[in-house]
Amino acid sequence: MKILAFGEVMMRLTPPDYKQIEQTNTLDMSFNGTGVNILSGLSRFGYDTTLLTTLPDNHVGKAAAGFIRRLGIDDSKINFSGQHIGIYFLELGYGNRPSQVTYLERLKSSFGISSLQDYNINSLIDDVDIIHICGISLSLGEGPRETAIQIAKMAYENGKIVCFDFNFRPSLNEDHSYEWMRTQYERILPYCTVVFGGKRDLIGLLDAQEKTLEQLSQEFTNKYQHIKYFAGSNRTTKEDKEYLSGFLYTNKTLYKSPEYLLTLYDRIGTGDAFAAGIITGIIEKWSVDKIIKFATSNSVLAHTTFGDSPVVDKEIVEQFMNNELDNVIR
Image 1 (cartoon, rainbow, N blue to C red):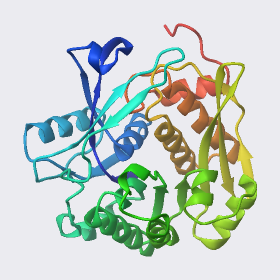
Image 2: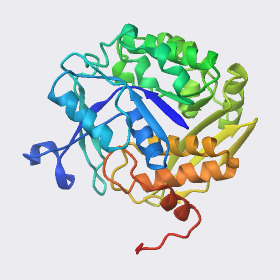
Image 3: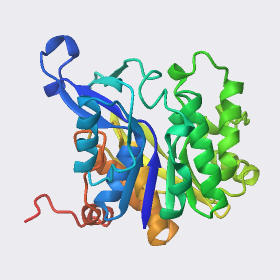
């Protein structure tokens, strides 16, 4: 099974030991993005993964490609042009202090200024089974937006599974109205098979009314009948403890996972771990109950690892899901 992801790669800079930026002279550097994170999890689970993106044609771009290769992701479809990569600083929260993300200019990154002509998408579709497209691509400029929509359209026409996540970022759309952004999402959703999002996405971006998640999911999949799966995760807080649960709407039924108590080390990228779990279950043709439990368990464990990209083995996730995980594995 071959999976291709199209999306942005960013550089993440993190102060060590839960420090804030003004408290440190050193930063931990890594490279990530929704596509990278999801492919990392799927590669860890044994699947053939490839990233399609554009990186800067300099040492930073080469370092990013090397980081991606170390995650087990094929970098042979990466283009190199321009001189800039999107950057964000992550100050990890501790105790009552929340984590804080500070973005630097993303719209002018090598990916953000890339165009449809930079990608030879005609030769890519036949060679893959599943294509994931990051919703942020719709917000980063005309080039990534039109490329994402054309990839989805061609994949749909060739009978491929198309996965898409909403990933709406208001900070990237200050020059656009919600109505304009909703139009962009409505252009790509007819080609999608699997969509990741939540109730807020359906209400805000699709101009839906305030209803239950099940009602909204039903209306959403009735409107876009090619969508077979709509999935997402939810955090809740009870008595100062945080819990995670997941949902999956398919075959006109809403399925929910149990709630899991979270132990927080690094929460960034945990939604991508959930998505990787859902895609894994679809590939393996598991029962819906197993898919949603596995995906949520994968996300729970991702909260305990450093960095955006999931690095947990499938066997560990299954043992956790079945309450079979020991404190020490020998």
